[in-house]
Image 1 (cartoon, rainbow, N blue to C red):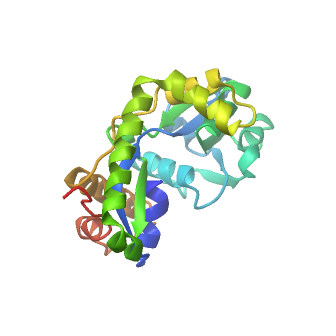
Image 2: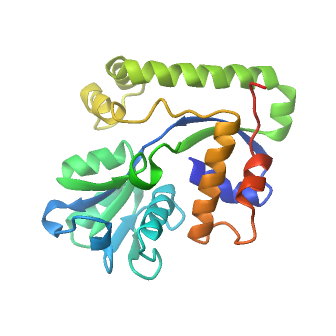
Length: 239
């Protein structure tokens, strides 16, 4: 996930990002009875996530900040076990939840929650959320293989966009995810932004935007130049 990569990369982690996968696999959820209708309604509320540095927590901290809500002062983040994020809301220990799909989809359905925001609309419209990277020595020794992986990544995401039922059926049969049927997986897959898989200059531009977002929530150092760092940690594998 983009927001998981960037701090280690800023600190010198030897990886180059070479292609984006898709957008939209995280959700911010609230109970229907909460009366919370928009992001402003979260001010003063408790939000459950599975960790202080988890991608959903960071992603929606950016969303809140861009909506004029201080993500550290105006809300309280509650840390829950990964599999119990939804339960914290159901039991009144939190007023909202953030999570990754397919688990976010599961708790939305299980606890009859409302999706207040996600990472494919609003702040994140048109932005990739997940990327592929390769460590420096491996990249130098295997550029042709990485190039073929990038091409395959583009192909499989386009295929999934056009055949979500088939891909969901394969996933359900091959990996047997607990509590998820092929129909469930189809519902999870269908709305994801599979056509958003930047490579080359578009990838650099999106990474620079994500770095600027992380500066906004004090994850990235304030002196870091987003464009310089984005160019340093990406590679145009098709060039």
